[in-house]
Length: 254
Image (cartoon, helix red, strand yellow):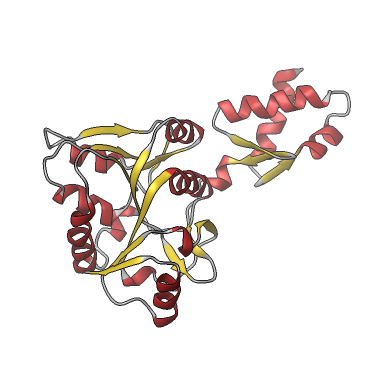
């Protein structure tokens, strides 16, 4: 019966990060490949998996973040994040469509933003709430699944929303940045959303404090060469500064 089969598939998704279609065909030899694909689509709609080439990735493993909880990061390098946020204010443009990433630095930027007619899209719940305290900004928040550690929204619904809008300026905050691995984060599904934002934005602005330099997490969402401007709370390492100069990236030190 389909209910028993799906119960067995769900059990597999709770124990394995990737479940291949071939494995399912061996497990259920009397069930067609088409039916098993529909099972995968069912679990994708239920938020239990993401359909990928050759099978499905389990959301239980995808949504496990390697980053510290937001409450802990809020207390780290407060002065540096304050300076980065204040420096980034000069890059805001009234009348533009702006994307604000999640994170403690962007939360401070949202608090400092002037009460101007700016259209903002964000994945950060707390950032949207902060912006709603002002009368003028138009605030869009993507739909999807909430990551409790980051207080951010991601998933297929979020990606679909980003695909449907235009972005002039994107303020992006990685969890780590290095020459070898580029801009990285600790959550696969958030990585996929950040990739799309970088691809769609006319101008990408990286906000970073020194604690994130020469640090890499598992998932890369873009390279340094994809960035238009870097705002940092201190001088970049020499090799990174040379790479930014060669790529024509504007570097602003807060």
